[in-house]
Length: 274
Image (cartoon, rainbow, N blue to C red; front, top):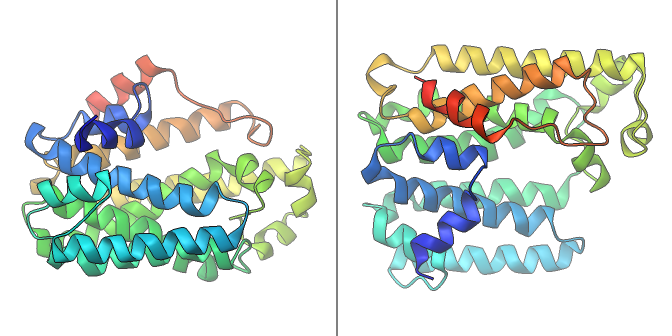
């Protein structure tokens, strides 16, 4: 297996939303975008699929060294080798790669967030940083890409939190701010124990509306001149909006299951995104 094949399997298995979103990108840009999504998945697995924080920190430290090796021209991991092959200016993106890794490190230090401004630091560090990296990979005006891509990345992460509410809670992480849960009279135990109630429904209606509004606002801000080149991010946003609608129709039953779109719907929604 070469490094491009590794990245494809890691980032975008057939049938996944990312698989269909990446297929909308310009052909020449797909290997680089796939490598970036694979890197994000590597970081995510390091902090979210390891129960021992000490092991997580050890692995993050390894990735910190690997990113430095990538910047110096001596990578060893398949994802790093893919980035070395496809990223035209690795050194220029080195600070952003470091920032993305630091963003994921927050998951090892913090499992709850007092309020939305507190959560926003995570949204910016992970969602905003990654979307900016992906946007610059194909942007016509890379210098200004962060202005519109970072809010889109934050919105995509907000939508992901809605989808993964139950799964995250079972793994000890709750991304719904504490003050919002208190406002709607929902406890962490309710989420962990999959307790549905009218209060939970109202909380999720609020969280879903915020994610939807953030996605729609961010999409409207993508410059017309960039939209064709940014079809991967646009497709991901369209898929996220459709999934939020599906969750709403299902009555916000996200605690015991991961609601998903069918592959054919994903294909159709991603293909139409523009």
